[in-house]
Length: 110
Length: 304
Image (cartoon, rainbow over all chains, first blue to last red; front, side, top):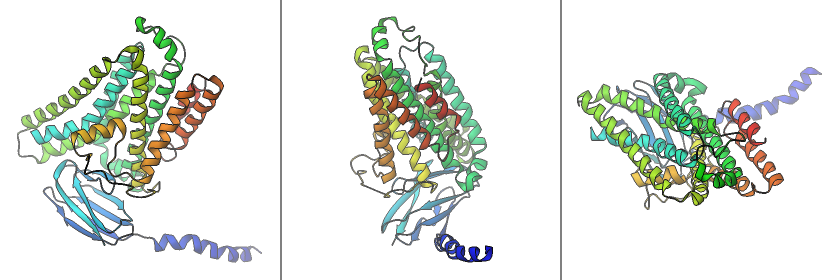
């Protein structure tokens, strides 16, 4: 009886678990070097969620900010941060370090 | 030096504007100065603490600690502004009658003094911790001597304070009879803008859907990165490229505060509306973040 119940539940479990595996968003590494972002241009697939793995390799705090993607996150000196972006429509989305507004880069979704 | 001043100005502007609005909105409440100063000092102490533990906070809540903290701090400010506004509306008659006897104008009822402290504390904490982190970083990396950087920091702080003072003294020129209604509208939009900021952090943390990443783009008219843009962003909640969730939070907050404020003359209706607003306040930002204690006190006091 109990086994049968478990067997009956199995498809539901699979249905719940499957998207979790399927939707694991692609990761893109982004480093802040103090005077520039590396890479300064990031290519991502359009209409898909992407995870940015940001590493601050400078000796000062940095704030990853983007008005076009609605993101702002402070990354302490030597720290790491994860920022989920998208799904983005095809296009160019700028980002910058809010503490050094002249240092920035662009995310290109296609 | 000037780069430092500019960034400190930008970071402190929001807090300065909020503090001056709270100061102007609480005219007639005895002891407001002490409670607001307490909020500012608490916010500064909190900023230093948050900056020191920045890395640990960032790593908590599966890497979303910073977003949840920001959303919670902003959500708290929104609830306190809502409480303050509704409370002011319910006491508007006494306040107007006793306007010539400022200081002892309000003797009865739940006084939103704690609200004043919490609003200013939240406003200072929100941008203050970022300012501290920025200043830490700049002293570590810049080629300029520390004295120039410190001077730059003070210049930025003074600039923010000056703009705040300008707003405060501008508001004081409004005749007392009309000041309450003007402040009501200002606080309403301020709260709505902060609510939109709060949900934006929850969208970033993937705890809320964005409901459309970009509904429209008016950055070619007014960019939030500019000083006027930043002022409009703080005072009215202006966002050049709003997401659906930001718009929803803005409109929802305006309705949740304006409806009970408007109905406050009609008692039974008003109490129901205030209770509804209180529930909404507890349900929305606290869902992910707020300490439950604060919204509960809020609901308990207003329904009295």
